[in-house]
Length: 86
Ligand SMILES: [Zn+2]
Image: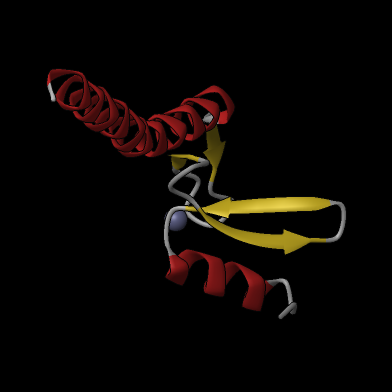
């Protein structure tokens, strides 16, 4: 009887480790993704109001030859309208 009890405790322990790993692994991966973003994060200039914004927070607009970054949706809209683009 004693042996079965030990086996049950061991199985429960393993199960706990597996569950724990699943719970921990996901935020860890998200954390690594954030790390990647931090690495790519840089200041970009809003061509509309000329303010510098972090490209991770910026409103993006794809343009021929690249991408533009704006501090806000309204700046992006104003700029694109001024350019006669979509
Ligand atoms: Zn702006």
